[in-house]
Length: 206
Image (cartoon, rainbow, N blue to C red; front, side, top):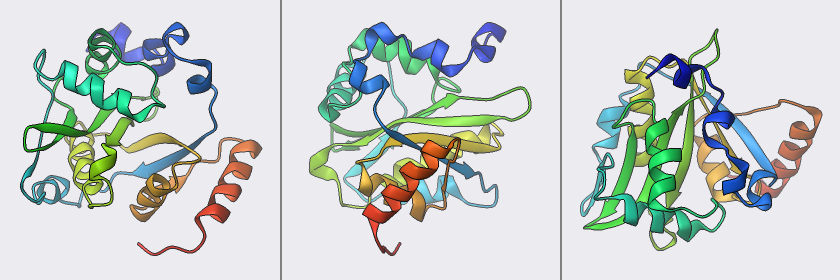
């Protein structure tokens, strides 16, 4: 990673606003933070994924079309092309293999990526573009994507990870809270957002 690439803020590296819809950039989001646990066997837990599901890192150019189709299926990530995936996603990873594709047989049904969000004082990772295709949700697959992704950050000696998600994604928020992520309170507005969200979530068990 070059010095220029490492020190430029994430939003300057990736968020070229001409490529994103207004509704994507300014949507209501929540932030969460997680301190990495270096005693947790993330890699071992990721390998417990049941067949016929498998996971591996992306390969260019083999996976670009399928990955664009997957990200476009969400509808809230903006419009993806193979060029944008290479530029705004794969070239931004903390290392070339530090993303996870989830397959059902030969069909790509999930994805999760890693991006560097470090400051001068703290080595912080960002989890980006975590998605599972709708037809495969509710099967407990997200945790395997999660464990494999956290293992990349551990191998690269990150202190903690940070992510954002939309307020309406209540199943995803429950998933993150059950994995001991903490709400991020950067402002009074974010505090109010979290109060509203927790009320919507109600009582839930992990």
